[in-house]
Length: 137
Image 1 (cartoon, rainbow, N blue to C red):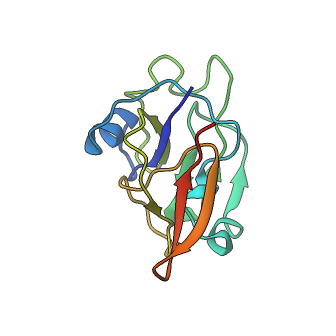
Image 2: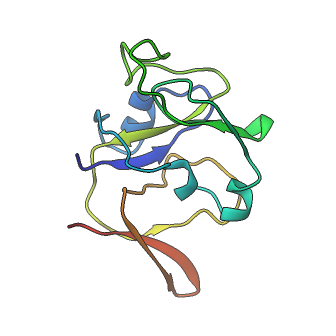
């Protein structure tokens, strides 16, 4: 399923994150760890990986850790992925895809609902900035 993955702010539901970018939540599943697409690699590799927990990837920036998404039917948020949130979690949310356009890669450790990535990306330098482009099959 085609999705634009967005990183929310702590405590935001995916419905809120997606609507902030004029898109809707979609029940897509990632084929890889999507959080790594939003952070510089040196920052990502310094985060502590925690066990799978909720139905969506969760970044706990204040504690330098993250949880991978769980596929368990009783995982937190399983009954309503779009509305579920947790106060200290920045969720990685699947939203409907907007038109394809270059998306700046995170250059600092920050959470921004405006960043978007898909499962497959190409990275290039454009006008001196590192940019990720969605690759459509």
